[in-house]
Length: 84
Image (cartoon, rainbow, N blue to C red; front, side):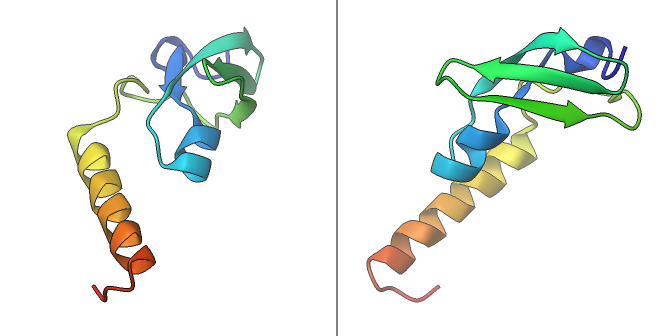
């Protein structure tokens, strides 16, 4: 039981890093130390859990959503040639 109960759903790390989107990924396989996930965009990935998370992986906390919005805004401004 790698991630346990709070690791049933997590943020897709590939959607987050490639398109800055928060997309839910469902656990498709639970291992002894690694869980494997898939999202609706066709990504699949593994997460090595040192210890089960203490809070659910989905939905992401408000602070994470806020930080992502700030990052997206900053990147958009940089693409337009604006300085932060």
